[in-house]
Image 1 (cartoon, each protein chain N blue to C red):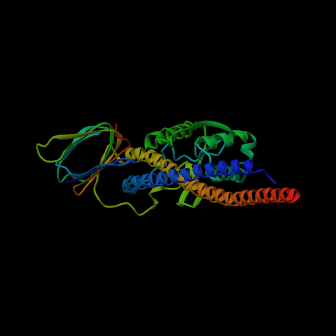
Image 2 (spheres, rainbow over the protein chains, first blue to last red):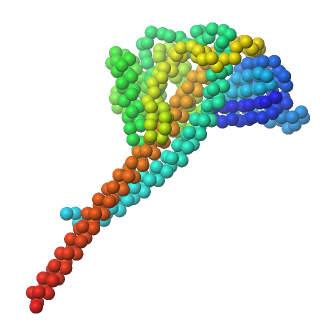
Length: 82
Length: 293
């Protein structure tokens, strides 16, 4: 699936991802391929991106935001990367 | 007629001033590029946020119970003025202050007389100008233009939003320079709080998709609204920043041209004086020689 992490200052990540873990306000959750449409708010925490199965994880610590998942497009709007 | 030495000194001083204005113009041009890049960087975020807000709020009626959507009778007003920290940029700051005064005169003349119009200044010049005109400056943010980032602007937006939410102010307006092109800035006055009409008015929403909402629509909308407010202010600051550099560039370009003209006149005077002095000396020598003959 396609993942984009955007802040008002710059585009932090754009590319393919296999699995992404989010710091949801209601608790941590993971999004895999073909996830159902979802909109969720995010708290302060780490967005963990796994580009391909078993690949090294990339961690982006965000200061709150929102995520939208629609048709294998994952869009993260983060206020800032800390 | 001025003495040769005086004219020469003036030529030196004018040409060094010209060098400075020319350098400032170049610096402004470079910074303008960066400022424009910043605006472009911010656009996708703003656009996606707007879309998301439209999507989420299309299902439910929105904003009415948000602390930022309440319309109260206006008893106290906060004006957010976006100006620059530095001068030498033509009428850039004066225009903002003038627009603020006109805006106050047109809408809040009575409140202003009772001292119920206060200012939140982003940029030093706005704070100074409004203090001089007898307004209370509630908060002034300086130096955010040197290292412009969303985080710095967020702080100002959050302060304004908190003061509105706890009832300290009943209305917040935003005044800034919008960047049209290098030579033109448009003064914009926008309503910041309460939120102007329904933000979901646009057709950007993608209806009829069964989203799962975490936690639920209403809470997400209540999260998104402050975000979009912050973005609104951030956009204003970015526009103003680009305008500032544009204004400074044109001002310094004009200054360089003026210095050029001044130099031309001064050189003329210099050469005339020099020639007159030489002619006088020759006449004296000829006169002296004739007297000896």
